Image (cartoon, rainbow, N blue to C red; front, side, top):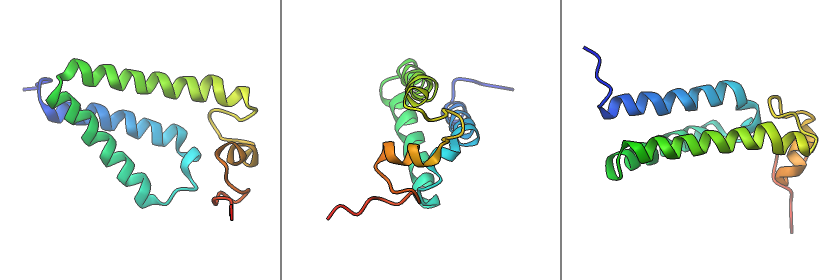
Length: 111
């Protein structure tokens, strides 16, 4: 009944990680329009599953693991080291300053 050797299983696994990321760390991209966030998710799934088709599932899951490791490093080590909470993106003004945004989350006007 259940098969794990299909592309739909790979899509489900990748989407599960994206869903968990959006639920737990979605505050970090509140300044981005929803359409852009959706496009990034769709492109991420397409790239990861495409790598699974082209290079093999082992490479896709290896890349997915590296992405998760990178997220853990950024949110668990780098952001707290810079004075930003890795789960809540607070203080928000310090987080926006790291990204080069103004305190409202909009790009700085560099004329």
